[in-house]
Image (cartoon, rainbow, N blue to C red):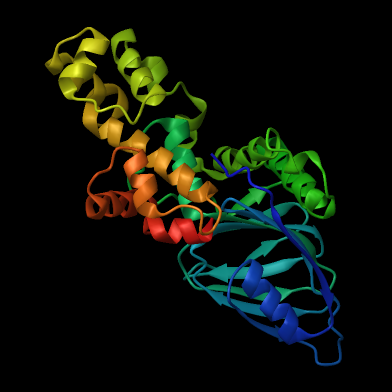
Length: 327
């Protein structure tokens, strides 16, 4: 679940290349920014909102620039509203993002924006790796096996890409609107969650069958669904395999087979995954200095902090303390 705390907002306009570079570094990624034509005068504008692992910004430079970023460490989409952007990542060929196609960047691979044209104004969407990968796990009910790969480009002229682009533009428009529904604790988190889930549906080609088909809990027998529901309702309960078998009304052996078949894990592995998800949610949502990793871990039944950190890192790719700092 994407954090529902009040969003952090930044709105800046500058003619200074170094200041523009610093703003991009503070709001998105450390970078090297170069004005390609010394005769041009930079006219950069940024309107950015950050909340719970999701950053949405309306960005332009007003001059032809090149930006070298290195590895992003997050999933990122550039959605031009005007003009064009040529870019490449890792060893991939040079790609073009324009008003009909968004560019989608992976967390790994050196990233270069070879030419951000002077008239290119775009919506930049940064989604932290833990947030997007945890959402995929929640949507499919299955642990992520191997890296999450999104399509490198997304058609935004029709279909789910167009709908996703509309939502990204709407959230960017609200970045400067105090008191908007995007800030409401009952609405804002759902909008940002829709942005994250929508990207998986629109660009997650490799996972589309799992996202659009029935989930494992739907396909599972009622007995297994009862056990899953109990864990979802009270993940901090001290479950044992025997107790889950009692809840399901089946033998321990049948329970284990059912979880292997319908959840691709063991009963206690399912308990651990649900607890990790709740811990991740709380770490993302915590305001700086208000809670510690150990408190969150104990809240969700993890008594061995070293093992918790190891399991968390294996699932989310970062230490729990890093999630807490990024929240």
